[in-house]
Amino acid sequence: MPHDLPLITMIVAGLGIAFLLGALASRLRISPLVGYLLAGVALGPATPGYVADAELANQLAEIGVILLMFGVGLHFSLKELLAVRAIAIPGAIFQMGIATALGVGLGLLLGWTIGASLIFGLALSVASTVVLLRALQERRLVTTDRGHIAVGWLIVEDLAMVLALVIIPAIAELGGGEANGESAGTLIGTLALTIGKVVAFVAIMLIAGRRIIPWLLHRIVHGGSRELFRLAVLAVALGVAFGASELFGVSFALGAFFAGMVLGESPLSQRAAQEILPLRDAFAVLFFVSVGMLFDPAIIIEQPLPVLATVAIIVFGKSAAAFAIVRLFGHPNRTALTISASLAQIGEFSFILAALGVSLMILPQEGQDLILAGAILSILINPLLFVLIGRKEPVDDVTTVPGVEPAGPRLTPTTLSGHAVVLGHGRVGQVIADELRAAGVALVVVDEDEDHLTLARAAGNETIFGNAVREDVLKAANIVGARWLFVAIPGAYEASDVVATARAANPALRILARAHADAEVDNLRAKGADTVIMGEREIALGLVAAALAGGGPAPDAPATPTSADNPTHMPASG
Image 1: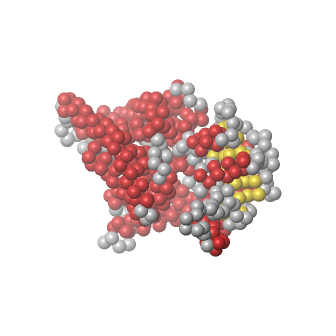
Image 2 (image 1 turned 135 degrees about the vertical axis):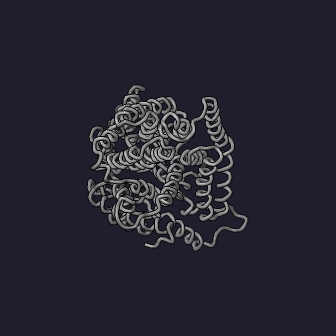
Image 3 (image 1 turned 90 degrees about the vertical axis):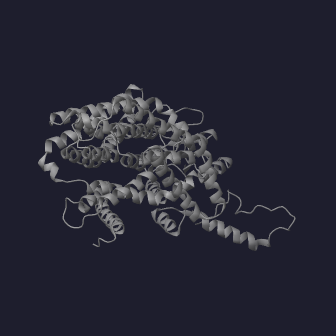
């Protein structure tokens, strides 16, 4: 491979090999993350052949972290963040304390200094942003109470790591390193300055950012250029993250999160999320590739017991601590299990801490190798933990009826029959539900967004909280006894899975779905949809029909709504 174009070579090799191994892993019914990590090992110095530029890989991966946290911030309001502070703050501190203590104990058993052991323990205590959010997104948990707690917990950990990176140079003297330690007074002053910078950044974002960022994007979108809007979203995400790091010493991830959160209060938040989705996923893959590049598989053979002990601390020690405190705060087992599994891995901050410890000659190279081995193995094990949780808690969603609060964690089948099932209660689903109800059609709304379900319940609809891809959720909606299924969710691939499952369960069901492209229309019809509406096409046909129907109203006459203007218009086919 050419070495005079390291950036292009890194991207091509990283994405190309990650795709091949990720596809192979998926075909073997293994998480694609395994393939991405193995792609990194193949491109790293531990294996023969081409060795990618690790520094470039890390910078590309950081972009993925920024876009990922920006996307999470778009769906995470300040109100939700404050709502989980009572458990996120003490929970994160307690869990980090337990994990750090276990890491210190292992380091001392291996003969390291107290400084090296402390850095090792801290590195094992903080979860990976990318892995945690990927796990929540794949299971549609980001917008649930469990997801809010996990993300809030993650933010507290990020803030703690910002402070840790300030303190570590002062540990150099205690750990026997060559770097000069700071006096107690200087250390306190440095800590106060760091905390002050973080507080100043948060204040600026909440006071000025929540006005300036939405205003800027509204001006851009009114200009009519989708290209400029996409560019503006990327500029805001990357610019705020970089500025937060350079000016306030805040991590890229935290800066991007707050940028997304202040934009999330704007009506443009959903469109912004759609624009960054493809880039976010691509750069997230490069993060896993960069992790794999750092890993030397030989350590598993040379030091199996220390590796096993490190993985045990990450997977079991952290999880047990998180489970205990979540239960202590009165949350159910399913919440405690989700938080425990989400945190049972380590990632980017762990690598930063390890590299800093080695550069200060506090942490031995063996410690960095163990941290990398622990990260790789815990990321590989993490999906299995969620599978185990799924078996322990096979049904964890809630069915509600108008005016009645959820009674428990189990799905209760609807008593409706000959009814309509409306999947998704966003802008499209809400119109469908309103029109069906006005026509006297009994219906049940299925959605995994509590805000959407709150609106549906307020309108008098029966609701089911859950992901309709799951057969038990469709069963609870009595898909076998239903007459219609309206698939109003925007995700075409998820929608096609639902259509296939519903068609298999009820061959006589009338299935109507939405799409955004011809390929999606063909896919949904192939899976069993009777009618597929592509919004852009129907708008175009409606406009042409209106133009040819009579030439339009007189110049001074009020415009008469046509079927294209009427949201209740529903063509017979897509």
